[in-house]
Amino acid sequence: MIIATQKDLAEIKHMVAPYKKVLIVGCGMCMTFCSAGGPDEVARLAENLATDREGLTVEKGMIPRQCADKFIDRLEEKIRDYEVILSMACGNGVQAVARRFPDKRVLPALNTQFIGIEQEPGVWTEMCMACGDCILGKTAGVCPVTRCAKGLLNGPCGGSQEGKCEVSKDRPCAWQEIYHGLKRLGLLDYLKGETQIKGWAVHPGRIVREELKAKES
Amino acid sequence: MSFRQALESDKFLVTAEIGPGKGTDTGVLLEDASILKDRVDAINVTDMQSSVMRLGSLAVCHLLTDMGIDPVLQVTCRDRNRLALQADLLSAWVLGIRNVLALTGDHPTLGDHPQAKPVFDLDSVSLLEVIGKLNGGADMAGNELKGATAFLPGAVVNPGADTEAALDLQIIKMEKKMEAGARFFQTQAIYDLDLFAKFMRRVEGYKTKILGGVILLKSAGMARFMNKNVAGVFVPEYLIKEMTETKDKVKTSIEIAARLVKGMKDLCHGVHIMAIGWEKRVPQVLDEAGL
Image (cartoon, rainbow over all chains, first blue to last red; front, side, top):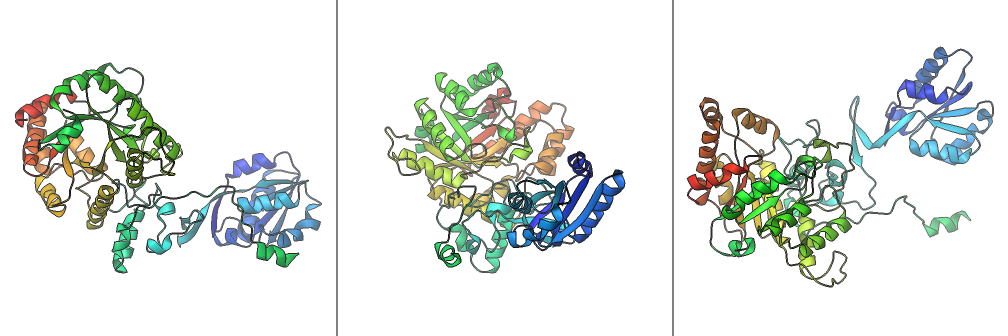
């Protein structure tokens, strides 16, 4: 899922300062699961803003996903009464809402961090960079593009200490994880293959699948 | 004799290293280089060591060639994508630089511009392959070059990797670097010759030349700092004790380094001395080691 964290309250207050009617909209997908923009966080932010300034109307909203028009459409009626939408979606959701309602000011309440997992309660780690060319089959299900701080493809640098990354001791060396994984599977020879060089995909990404386009029309 | 000729001979190799500073003042740097000149086969010039922004390796290497020194251009993958790396390699060649050491490079967060975007478009292995391609008259994309390079490519290995996994990975990567064209290896600093001997037995028969790394210990504090913070460097307690108890730190430092150099004569093909500011002492180390 996509992992995000809430912006500092001071920054959010500064963004909404010019407005009197704010609609906070949460997202029922990733943002709910990573406790950044689900119903609880929407309620808490609404309370924080409402108690902060007199004369400010804050309304709460929640849709199952902010990254698909069919759900965003549900906001159409509601937003008419508000000057600004304060979105508690990831950057994807904020943009999808802004694109759907081009005449409405849409503000981000979150900082989108990465695609990752909840490693343990309260701890999230990045797992995938959406690089467009998955090599997890060769690396025992551990992505070096993402989880090695240097994205190295041909083995580790010399910087790890006690199995930890040189960048910080709270991060494991991805290559040592790959090594242990491949060893467990009896696949260590995978490390010895030909030199890997990555071809970087062009961003912004765009995918066209003709068979699906045809089906819709 | 060029570094390539020395490497192709049976000579015990000696290389040293200088690190450009922050700014355009090259006075001390070139003075250090001139002191080392007649005692070493080549001088490495570091590429913004520890990810601290400094005067570049390419320009300093060129200044060394002007002084009649054969430099080893250290090239890291930290700051340049494949276009910039190839362009700099071609530039190095036309400026008279003949030896390249391919490195991954430290992460920018370790340096003085921690918010820099890390590049790492290539890594040390793929960079070696690219050097091989440029030597073969083509760029990485297969386009023909009008005028090829003929670099002597080298790489690094860390024999003191602290876990079994890390050491296995170092050796697997070393093999990949050899396949990608590395003709010599300079190692991380070694203080435990028994451990190094064990490493050398593991890579016995590898068709390459290995230069054992030596860092001059300036103090017991420096040793403890490296033990804690520098990956793969382990200074045994008895050396720390020697440095603590001595009345003449410089003399003891030189003695220890000379002992290590002497010990390496029987173990590998050369030494790579990293004096980190004590370049002027390197001739004394070599004198004491009988080189």
